[in-house]
Image (cartoon, rainbow over all chains, first blue to last red; front, top):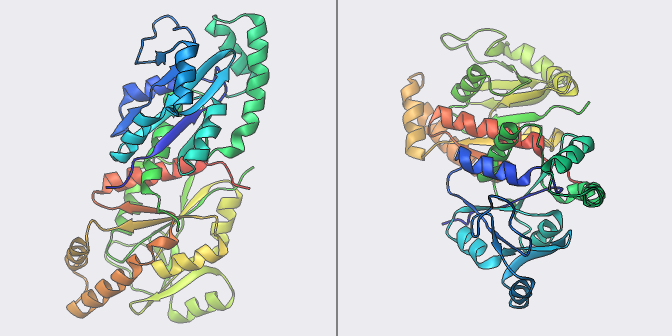
Length: 193
Length: 193
């Protein structure tokens, strides 16, 4: 049996990674796709659930996971730690199922070192102004955080060339269709020797 | 403006390249896609039209086109010549539109030399037995021609590794969906330096 695909969906904060991932999940157009759940030290936002959106950890627990090599990638982002539990990812692709990781740009580059054969998708905002509006409208951050996120986002967009595909999140359904097409196309790819 | 994609749909005789191409055309799910029309010395089959299915040429006219470098590729196949008029292909992609070439395996490999950046799709039969049935059911060929086509087809399937994608033609709608996904994904690809 051939291994499943490791799909990384990344992009700047505020671009809508989470929203697109949830929409993909609800559309159910990709067979045999599993969603990875990250560990984080950040506080749950309203409506988020343990084990569904994230595994919420204390900083001490998180450092233990790093120490024991239980994270495939981890990154500190605006004061919080995020990481991908390694074992679940490896089990899933070894079972021939695809897994999608919705992660920050720093983390994606770490995963690429371990899994260069992964499918790396960068979600782009239609424009930087649009991105700023989205971060503001999220309404959970103050001005200093917004400005910091914007400068981080601009740096992150420069990392685009490390990715395989760019998907513009102009409209959620269209972004989902593009991602579904990428996954289908990747399954048709002839492996290069 | 960026150039359009040159998409090559190839595969063994009898696999259903023509049928899939016609279905793609009728589905109209790919924007800005133009269909290349080949030149051939073979006789029109029932229902085929000049300038729609092929440009029908005498052997002499065909040799003149080769002489004048007017063909992007040409191949002799089971006693007939097939070729792709070059100018139309180049004009189309320079206008930023995609063009699809439905051609034989020999010809596809020639196009790859001129356009290595093309998207090369190999249409596969679900099995070799299935392929033999399809060639037989076409009903226009005798047993010697069928046996010859089968041995050519087996050799051609060995050329798979020169292609980018393999699409199994198990069911026409599914094959079309896969090709549509490949074209959409290729438009999201980040160019490698």
